[in-house]
Length: 367
Ligand SMILES: [Zn+2]
Image (cartoon, rainbow, N blue to C red; front, side):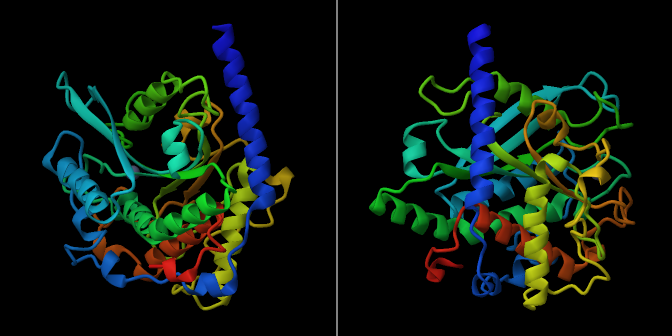
């Protein structure tokens, strides 16, 4: 036990060092690169069954057909278009207050992209971890959850699609020069976020609780840099309740405010460059200048909690106040504000590109 504890402490120290290192070496995208982040509206067209979003605008309750349809959409997209992303599943079952003794399946899906040298030596890359939940709430019957969180899932798929070829180029260049960095990215699509009856510690976050339990009990090989997959998460970026017009996303955590500022700066620059579409009264990310004394100990309960309680650094991109359509039948495709959806997708891409240090990769790798 003592040895594991020490390894965990060492892992935490390494993570802190890497975070600090990242903060220092983080390369901003140029104006030109920000303007090159294109978006095909067909990906988010709510009527385009070949797009990223439309197939998710169905009910996606665990244990129902919709859950499987959503899963197939993710897996087919990655296997057809992005085969270099390693897919893994983390499955559990559980009962809920609404479904009696029947065991429901909760199935998280993880898509990971690492350079070859980290694939060869598992547990040596830190992982930017981009997260959204794909399940939808059981009630009201027929609830779609377009902002909650079909649209965020589609934004993450779009992010993977946009950076894929650039990552290949980046790592080819590193292989050639010998200057390798151990930075990867994973997209975690979580199941069972929603409560089935009332939000409590046991009736909510079914998928994220199961995933944290499994990851913290899956030690990596002794030669790995990190102790376990939890320790490998360099930043946990959770998107939720995004897609309504006029969003306001506060900075919730002082410890990751530096990352929030990077994302806010991206939004500001892209808006000034005319690279975004919405015309909000104020920035989506308006807490850029939040002072340390203004941080409280409150946050919005969500999938990050089981990770946060284990010391994982969190950037929570969720609107406060919640969208007006929140948990109503109006949270559907027709009520999404498409310029806002597009803007969040582009901001997420730019943030990921900066984190992965894609500034100096040939722009011909942009898709
Ligand atoms: Zn919800």
